[in-house]
Length: 229
Image (cartoon, rainbow, N blue to C red; front, side, top):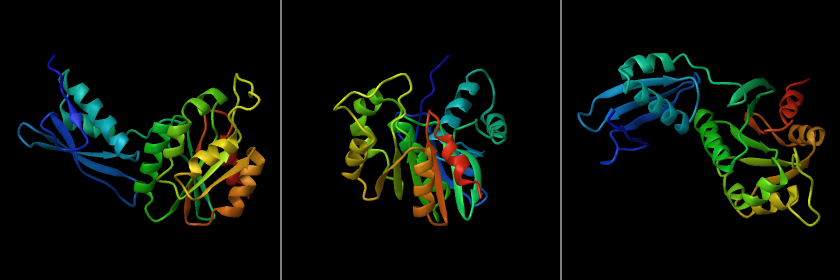
């Protein structure tokens, strides 16, 4: 099997690339896959947002092409895919504030998801609610976390979810994470536990807005709380 390469933009080193990427008000993502060899174009429509999902879709289609599935057939199948739970999962809307759950807890995942939210909802403020997952990961990736919230208009940092770990005296804290992010972002706050975070967001977030809750722990309870009367 001959390897097939792909990229975000046209490149002499990529067999296929993405072009005309855009989001529409009906919640869809559109793009065209373009062949370097003959400029052939195949239109894709996705129900999931963001450039990263467009790249994932193109990768899947090209993999299927390697075993004989035409790109157009893959595009038609992908148009019906509605994502999985806790991957930009829209939980509901209350008072003009849309609430989304996302499992992303690595800096790169948070970054692309926020960029997708900004592309999908350009006329709404984007709020990131981050529940840091484990003390060791938060400490090890702190520099990356500090820089991954650029697409958010506001950032709420919850208490660190310990999972299997124990806090280390003098070690990383949620406030230290807030301080690191604040070096690159002007609107960051430590909101504490689940109940305190719900209260802080109700006080701070005004419609129209999107709140994306990033958690591999128990913070989906924040989404549930925000949607309650």
